[in-house]
Image (cartoon, rainbow, N blue to C red):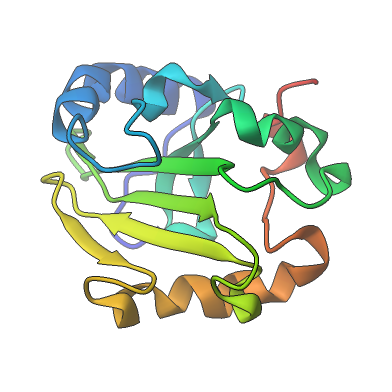
Length: 170
């Protein structure tokens, strides 16, 4: 897990709950869509889980109202313009102390924004809340790894879905 302590689902959820206020404060000013705090959106995982595709960090998947079809997972179809998926993250050191990790955001844009990325805009926020990179903007090369990974699921509108054991029912 790249230095991450391995946690049970219960331990991961407990660690996340210890960080939730800090996460809310750190990302309060993140410019996500209409700047609605993602922690107020629906969470699509039943428990915090380790994500191998996000550096082994523990993550949670949130989506705004426009992305409500996300709960249909592989049957979600093409997301509408304005759909936003936010994935917060954290790590846990070998002493069991959780630390806020990056925030990963996908926002569905108008057709023609970036066809090879399914018209998704990717943003990556650092653990201090600062914007590291955004598609077509600041340090856009810094989110090219998102595009190159998500192209593998182009048939699912470039969306990866949660492991089945962590999915909420729709």
